[in-house]
Figure 1 (cartoon, rainbow, N blue to C red):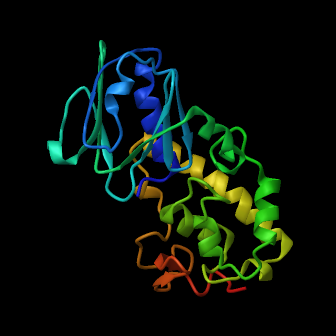
Figure 2 (cartoon, rainbow, N blue to C red; figure 1 turned 45 degrees about the vertical axis):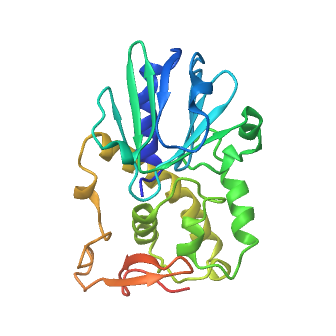
Length: 244
């Protein structure tokens, strides 16, 4: 599943269409796409792993899920995978194998934009309060909780926990105040590192533990385990990461 930084890159790639009017809309997404024809794309907003295309009368929410993708100016996948295509005088956008929904513009005002780790509105103090209210939650689940760390995915989770030296099955309530602060700070810091590395096509070269076999510090074999309520893959070192 694409994580927040990848969604930011998609937003940047779609920017040339902002200010343009839709001339044709199609695809198998289950809403009336003809209503988009003639509407201007005013803005593209992202919230974690979600993208909102903001038009005159409605917004379209795009969530790429596990295997979603998009292309510009050329349809690269078959019609059965095409959820939405938007044609403009200057080109076209295609979204495949993803969730596409139409939402009212009022819906956007109900989003907690301060929970997005990559947003200028990111509020670390609000994240701290949310975490403190869930002392029995494992840190691996906390990082993947989109209400707390919108945009964080499994890669960011594994790398952040290695950076701060905490095992994924540690409980939030057992973390010292210093570690809780590091958890919040590194969720944002690593997300921007991810973005920069992704732009330079060197992201995987910078992975320290995700999908790796040995700890880069001590050389010990990493634990590979499904952790937390979500049973997502975790990679961690029992020596250099502490269980709290």
